[in-house]
Image (cartoon, rainbow, N blue to C red; front, side, top):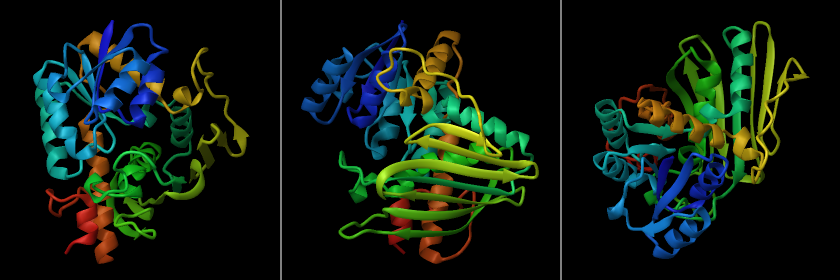
Length: 339
């Protein structure tokens, strides 16, 4: 039995709690939050016990770090110091300085994972396989659109950034998976827009340059009336289309790919298609085998390098190298808004 604790009691922990219900060998034991009320509510839903951050990991094997991003490093260090594995939600951190420390912590301990659920998504896996069969991609476009979040501190400058930082990290990760083994070398350009009453971006378009010669466009927006997560890729032998939200599908040259079916009994099939169940299955297997979790913090830092470069590019209008060569102690929002 793998014991799971939540550092944070926000919306994403409800998703992980529902995904965990599908795994008989995993149980939630503790939930910590800044708000005692929130911790008690999530604990009641998941079968755990509400506690304070200071009481973590409380004997848990793994702590899902789902606090505001500025606290990710602190809670990951607390988990590892308590002999638990830290699974850090996306985005990995608010600064590359903290991301560097999380990568170093993972290298020392072998106990830091990055909770990019799309890595484990059966739907994404099928799309990536199809992209590999196309050869070196010549076109890639990823678009993640939804409404503004109405929970937590997502619209506050303290979060670290807006739509590109919060939603866009998943779109960037998907672009990296689809284009691999090609690697991003620079952000060619970025346009960030802030809606009325916002200090941070709610709409972002980023152009990425890869070492293969590919130029990819990544869009992340909070201006959509309904959520749509999708991607299109093309190569010498055809095209792939992926849809993750609101429906799940993969098409190769217009022909649908048969996707793995969700296991019975899930609260929603999206727990399967978006990779949340498979992520916890992989984590459980890693713990039982005594190996470092996959993906590790390196992926989260790489994504944050790209995001920081994009925010800087949006301010300067210039191409920015990846890995990012600017200051590593500033949030993406600061890189955009401050000189």
